Amino acid sequence: MEDVQEARHNQLGIPLAEIAVNITIENLRAVASAQLDRLVGYQYTIGLLSDAINVDELMQRYKAKKSYFAIASNWFGKQHIWVKALIGAVFVGASYLLSLSFVLIGIIYVAIAYLMENHYRTSQEQEELIEEDLVHLK
Image (cartoon, rainbow, N blue to C red; front, side, top):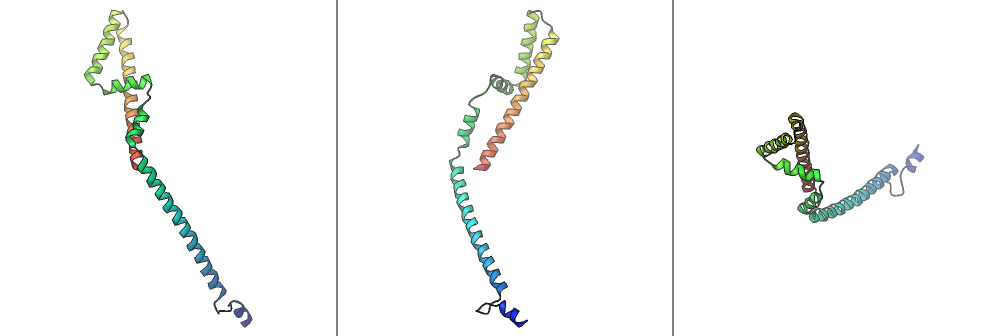
């Protein structure tokens, strides 16, 4: 039994289990220190990138190209309700001059107006979300 206990001690009189624990702790410290150094490096790189982000410039580039429908819906969405009603009256009046159905033109106008208003609101919400995300990145 004493031979087993002696085998567990090295020449300095320290148990082998304690040596293994000390080696493991030192390895974990070294790994943790290396990981911390990498994280600090990443943080520095991210800081440099976030300082380089110009939110206004990015949003201008994002808004640079729009489809004809987007241009029309943006214009329509910015108008007051009385301008929208006036546009509807012009369509109905034009249909009277062309001897078309008032009801059909009215329904078509309401459908187009709904689609344009919906597109305008959706694109505004998307732009706000993109701007918020870019600001949070910075």
